[in-house]
Image (cartoon, rainbow, N blue to C red; front, side, top):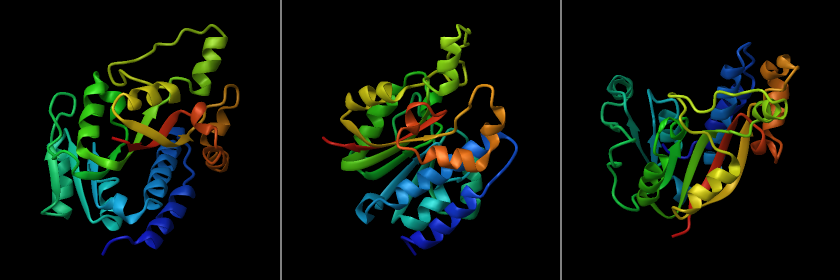
Length: 238
């Protein structure tokens, strides 16, 4: 049964009620809720075939299967994909290194691509963006998350002259909204929505794990400019 939006929204309320002491846990739950909310509001034709890039052990995969006609997943870990297969034996999932291998889908096959917590791990992301654009049909949608290099705590450190480590082996890439907008445009993708999740306020660390504060912040239209994580919804124009 597809398009069970009511059940999805119930799950979202449970996610928003999460209140754990670790800010990263809270940011992750809010990010997941935001993404599912954005996808759940898309028209039916945009959920015909969904590609879940970096599907891991099915965090989004199983939710997407409830509201889409078909879902396919890609991940670098066969162990994680095996967990999906144990639950759905005939799941269309592929073990693949997205940094070096093309996506195993036809040109224009997908109506929606989800890439969450993936792009920052790719050393040459332009190649993957090109593959995403190839797989998307014209009018198709990309929902992606990236860490924000202009997050509030980064800006504060720069103003105070504090040295930051910059990109790491784990996160070789971070983008601002404007960086991402330019990169997507080079591949025929145009941002329609920007959301931000998570904010670390200098000298007020308690706010980082304050669920109500973080939920409220993520609702602000300008949150994506200074949030820890950016969520973008972009469409393929050509």
